[in-house]
Image (cartoon, rainbow, N blue to C red; front, side):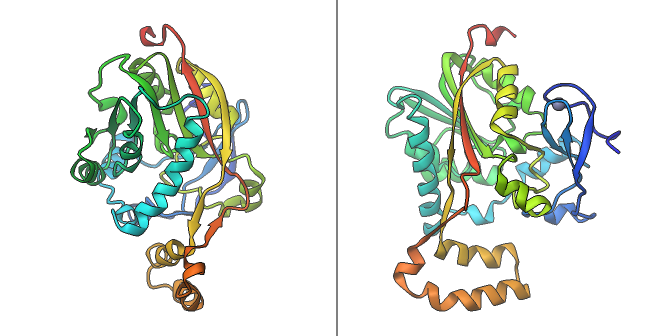
Length: 311
Ligand SMILES: [Zn+2]
């Protein structure tokens, strides 16, 4: 059943159990970025890493990521406000480990550049890497940021030149997370910090949701817990300092606008929008925030060990 999977990216063993049979069918092109559509998902019996079977080679995946349009991420007022709230939370959590003042920051998966534009107020310098050509161009044009559009392994960056490297909702999208983290370890100065945020596949919310957990999607090739992500990071030459759990929240107005994009023209989206329309017209309700019922996202902090650059 698991014969088509490569050895486990964390422990190197080949002992997988099928957790969720895939439901994506053959229409991967149009469902590459949709929630709740995925290929077969397995769990390593040895180390617990959760991995999705991939039908494409890394070069094809890279092409799809570079062509991403992030239509929902376009720089509209509403999206900017939503992302601003999320990044304020993440910045606050980063600073529980080390203040940003004077730090040379590299954001990997920089998207349209909003996080770097916020970090720049305190940091000594900021740079970004982002696979989506459109998003990177947005970051350069809108904020005047230095953002390269390429994969991590293709990035032209000096060694040992960064004090903080951040990957927010990125590690689950990587086809070779161990290789990419080892590459980034060479870019971090000794004593520098690595921060990664992702969803936790081990929470009761994920378990209760089972095959319907929205974070199960084709371009999430791996699903971590703080434990498995910690092991992956240590394998790359870092020492884990700890992790913090956090809630994501969305305004009613944002969710209302997202419905039509996620389920365009469907009966479900028409019904939902009809029910919500009178509520969204009320100011206090439109601005109210809906939070996930559990802290199912976490940020993990790790410090680069001396010698990581020589590995
Ligand atoms: Zn394993």
